[in-house]
Image 1 (tube, rainbow, N blue to C red):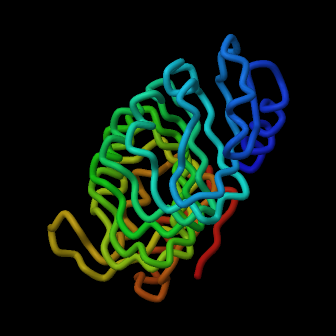
Image 2: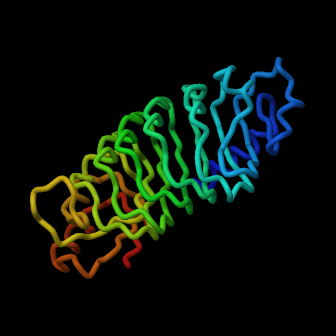
Image 3: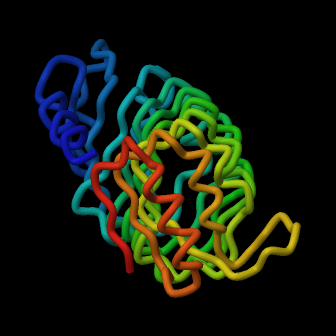
Length: 240
């Protein structure tokens, strides 16, 4: 994932890529089709130049030096239907609009260390999403059921987040190869939301190469050892 971010930074220096601070958009060449944008926004609302929204060409949107951003401009999603990468880490974003479901081509969503307290159920409509980083959310306690519909997800990072309720059947994400923040639960009741996952869910996640397990004291030692021993593709295991 870090390699991907570094490559994005390099791409911003090539054709069709641009980086600027809020207020510099007046100098944009209207003939340039911007597909990669790195934006520093000093206000509390993430805003894009009207030209970029009208072009509807943007593939990569990355914020930097924007810790004060708390909300997203209402009409942004309308012009980002081709977006592949959305990186809003280290901002103060508190919520995502339900309209995020319209970003049907989104592959990479990074919301690391933001102030989001709730994720919309509509996140489950991001059918092509491969990487979801929602680590370090101090106010996020519940993951939406929609997470389990992200069948193409390869990387899920939810570590350092005080989760108390998660959707059952995380084992449906069979393409996962990187999972940070698998919280072990004690509740075996057949409900949609549980306090943590049963280790048996890992039996369906046979492609995992990197796994972080949290609240391991809740797990059955004998059963857990057998399940982990059968994960033949696993290369890194961290237990907390």
